[in-house]
Figure 1 (tube, rainbow, N blue to C red):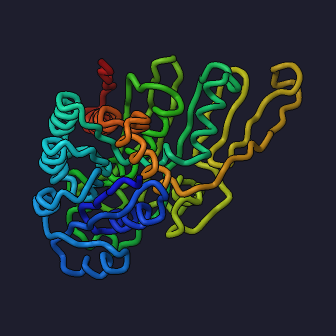
Figure 2 (tube, rainbow, N blue to C red):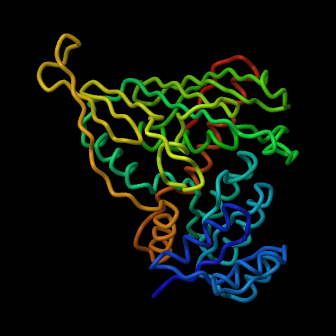
Length: 345
């Protein structure tokens, strides 16, 4: 039986979640929640009902699961309301506006045994699943070095929305958290970060560029950089082909190196020495095939399986909290010009 899933928040990402549920064979869109009457048009198009508030939805008892795609400041109280009602919830990243709020969600989920998922949808991309399998199978050997690039140019009118120019916004909070989740998923936990940031190009209260050094539990080192004022083809958005809103390039954005080989994403080029491992000997690349599928639809499908008790969350509330912890450590490091340790306990 299809699981009834409601979407709370009908903004850009909320609309994409609603469309994903509509396209998912294991789920049905049971309701749309948004106080803006304009959301009624989308509800009619998708053949569902609209409510003004989460409380109205909960009173109607129309949802087996809920997707929260509301402003970040609402995540904690709304998530706690869903958990209190015994309804599994998928929360768009970030989980909360601070670690304290994220911890409240994690603790409430555990205490009530109600599943909470964090909306880092990239993990649900088939190419990421394939990359993780290759790494876990030992095709790269021991991971030694990682490099990730997240460069793009946001147009000036993007910043007409004032909160995007103020603390709590910026590409570190808004964009980089997805890349942090990806590197954790593929390379292991992050134990230390050191960062520098700049606002010299846009002169906003928040950074426009940030460069980070990371140390992973296994000893690997990584460099990660993000900029929203750089004209560039090197970002997940412009290379992974997962969102049709972005133009497609044939470039790369991640490189993961190990003692037996290196892997480039998103094209899954595996570089190895066919004979002796030596820079004096030939090296060749193999393009590894992978399935192409919408990660948002796959995320909803996994959410439905979690609701049925068939799977555990691929991206748990705890994952969301750790990602947020790393982002806050990056911001602290850039502000205080210091190395910051990450507590993974």
